[in-house]
Picture 1 (cartoon, protein in one colour):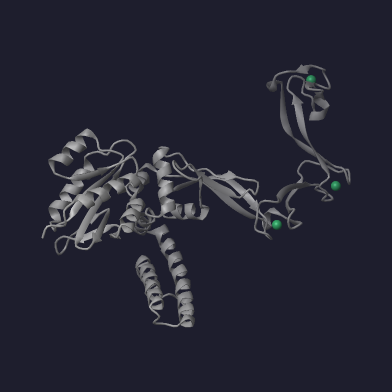
Picture 2 (picture 1 turned 45 degrees about the vertical axis):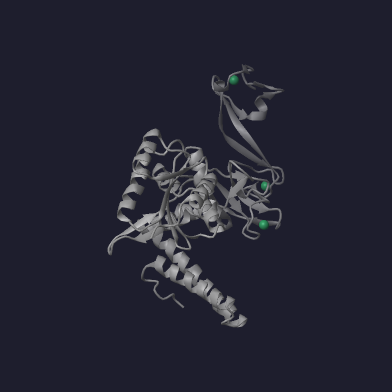
Length: 390
Ligand SMILES: [Zn+2]
Ligand SMILES: [Zn+2]
Ligand SMILES: [Zn+2]
């Protein structure tokens, strides 16, 4: 069955299916549909959601505006926030893979507080697919086609004639001065290199050069230059050629300056949302308020509790936040005149100039070294702020 609306806006279709699932779950929670029907319907919906998600990513590869929509959404995910923080903290140092004993690539990221964190490779790849990360080829790994693991795969070099792996691979060396070419072993005398023809002691690397390899087979005694190469998985006891191997590209991931600028604006939203939600606020990210019939004002988030409306803009910098976000919030508040508490959340601090502008325009500011502390500061402001004036 092809998903209806697949030809229309794929993001809207994906959202529609997601909210359909939420509805279904709400109905089930209210005991409006029986278990069996719920199981069936939710499975069908989840399948359609994965298909819709694939379609969304497909269209993001062609359409930059879809890619941007997906990026802005992804920035609020906890894992993605950790990744963005890494790039902010390290001024854009790429995230490189590490290979443990199982050879499966891991992407460890230093986190300033708490447990060591390893970014999920699939998640990094998805971010790259929507333009959030740049990727550069770092290494290729051979996976066994049977167990789908790289951990027990060994490269094999075999006799070109009989296929035995019992071969000797020798390096061929040329003594540059006298032109002698022989196997490396013929030059080796203890730890020294001595030319077997002219008997000169070779002390500098530029006195001889490596000109190739030669192989000989201990089974059939054949001599040849190019051994046949294959792979062997010790776990499966299975040998396979390059042709049948699963070869996976492993990338290092970076973030361009432009994207870092876009992404870092969202830092801390998760933390703010969490704190406000825990304190009984209903939070909307991003916070959209209709201003005039044709216009809307967008804040980083808005939060509601009883009759109180709170609009928060979040500004983030690795040193000092400049004037721009202060002015932006000021302009929004000129357009949006309904009573509310408006706060500029700043990590870590405002510049001197920005602070003067904030004071001049009576902008409430919550500053702190990280989003968590800013959240607590905001709670204090909200507790002391008078209920909205009617
Ligand atoms: Zn295997
Ligand atoms: Zn052989
Ligand atoms: Zn020589």
